[in-house]
Length: 302
Ligand SMILES: Cc1cc2nc3c(=O)[nH]c(=O)nc-3n(C[C@H](O)[C@H](O)[C@H](O)COP(=O)(O)OP(=O)(O)OC[C@H]3O[C@@H](n4cnc5c(N)ncnc54)[C@H](O)[C@@H]3O)c2cc1C
Image 1 (cartoon, rainbow, N blue to C red):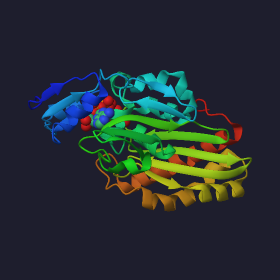
Image 2 (cartoon, rainbow, N blue to C red; image 1 turned 135 degrees about the vertical axis):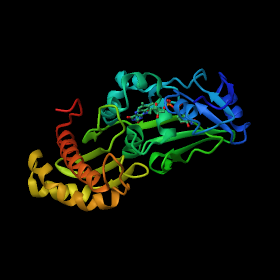
Image 3 (spheres, protein in one colour; image 1 turned 120 degrees about the vertical axis):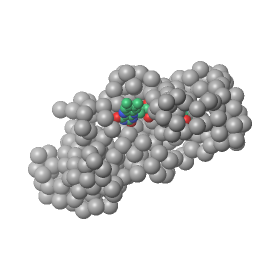
Image 4 (cartoon, rainbow, N blue to C red; image 1 turned 45 degrees about the vertical axis):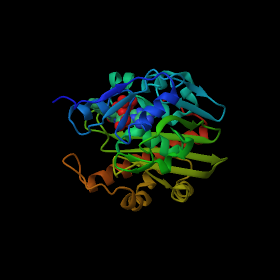
């Protein structure tokens, strides 16, 4: 099948891109890396009247550290972020990127495109939600910031209006006393996750200050919970021993799974199976993130 006919524009200035999108009265679509949109067009799941290709818009290829955040503009490809040293400042993003599809796909796909597409099983939206990154939207009325936890409103549905371009995301950089964890289970590496978790733990000395758990692939959007109470009580019962901690966490996490994992399930895994995956993955990753926070090490998985 071929895409239905559409008009195509390739502006070089953001102002022109915004006006082109707004001028299409809701019938326009932004084209970034094309890794999700082009298959959707080819299968005629969408029939936009106009594509606004933003690949040559000046300034949208910036990846920069701004002190307390890492800013990724709309046309920065996933693979560039994966390999840029600046990404060391956001360890959770570095951990997640190799799980996004395949290398070839990441060479074209953009970080912001993944956010705009908002697949419930996608990795980058989960990282954004866990860190509550700030998303910048630009329309003819100006720019506005949306916290990532408010951006995803349902399956493949976001706070983006028909006139909005997602121009950048700012991930907060990690600070001392923070540790992170990320894991997912997919049938084959590169497939969308059956269940996955992104975790952030912050400690003050040996005390758990904050623990945030985001699940993906198990609901219609990334789901985030504060689990500091559960982690702190598991730590006080098991001491600083990571193995004992990981063994103690599944019990409180099983209760949390009831609320966080609400997918109907499909041919690849029932809801109960995904709940079990979620409990196992989140117990392990919370224990690892806690250990990393205490040791101040957020490099590759030990
Ligand atoms: C075989 C295959 C496997 C994949 N596996 C995974 C996976 O495991 N994990 C995963 O997370 N993803 C996966 N993907 C999706 C991939 O990550 C895409 O790159 C990503 O979802 C979209 O990024 P893109 O830049 O290609 O966006 P596009 O395809 O260009 O656009 C996607 C959608 O977002 C909108 N959009 C894009 N950029 C903007 C913007 N700046 N402002 C407003 N709207 C915008 C478009 O209008 C469109 O609706 C897979 C894709 C394929 C084809």
